[in-house]
Amino acid sequence: MATVIGVRFRNAGKLYYFDPGKLWPTAGDAVIVETVRGMEYGEVVTGVKEVSDDMITPPLKMVIRIATAEDAQHHVENVAKEKDALAVCQKKVDEHKLQMKLVGCEYTFDNSKILFYFTSDKRVDFRVLVKDLAGVFRTRIELRQIGVRDEAKMMGGLGICGRQVCCAAFLGDFQPVSIKMAKEQSLSLNPNKISGVCGRLMCCLKYEEDHYEATRKQMPKVGKEVITPDGNGTVIDLNILKETVRVRLPKGDGFEQKDYPMQDVKRANPPQRQNAKQEEAVPQEEETEEAVLTDEMNEEMDAAEEITEE
Image (cartoon, rainbow, N blue to C red; front, side, top):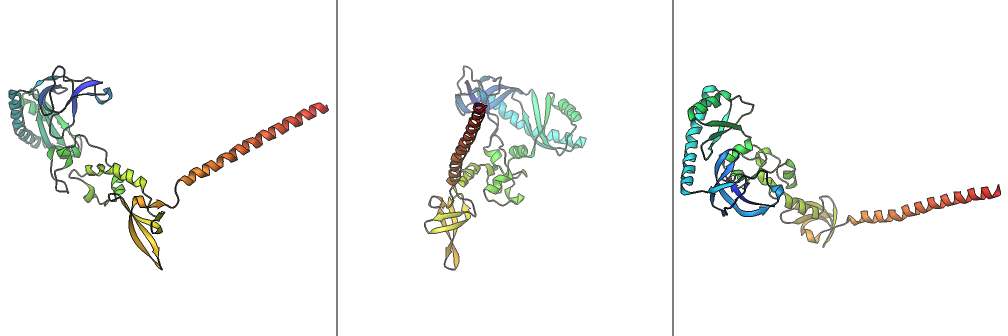
């Protein structure tokens, strides 16, 4: 077990663990920490707690100090300079005619490095660009190519639901999303309806997937025969959110459809019958083994009689 605090460096950013040392900052405090990029200004999200060693990536960096008013002012100045730096970088990109789209810019707290984030459909040779930027800013320059999901996270925007995109609002890490989740939830497979502003499948498809999977296992499949309070019928539809089953029942010369809570619907052919078949098969195997033993004993007795006769 290790004693750590959780720190984020930007809104809805990834959560990183640090060793608080002798300091005990609480959630909401600003701290100066040591990272692989240098000194950084971040916000404490989770206070001091113990986590298993599997949840941390060694070596665990230290918290240098709790941020002061001067540190907070310096951080605000760095954020203000990022817009100007992004404009200068965009001008240099246009001069070199590079096929890249600038997304964002970050200053490290100690101003030892400036990071520029960009997207591109192909690999870009930006060595000359880095030299020009280093000559302008007189500090170390780093360019990072990111994907479309990270671009949406940094840029923000509104989803088709009308709310701020989840990745920019509260998601720390991206979770795997597949088209199977849309099928499981009976959603339209039209890419325009299940894709986010980044052009990839919406992250929210993952939110209710566990509930859909767990509930669907407790309900009969479409097309199966079931027993209802009104008699036997065939399942024609499932409503996972309401946990109801729509059943087609015979009525006179035709049929009628009714919705039932899944607790009131029972499978006409429960899966226990398979276990019963397996239990019936066990005695047959035992009888077969006994028959084999009997045959072997008979052969040994016959051989003994032959020896006696000789």
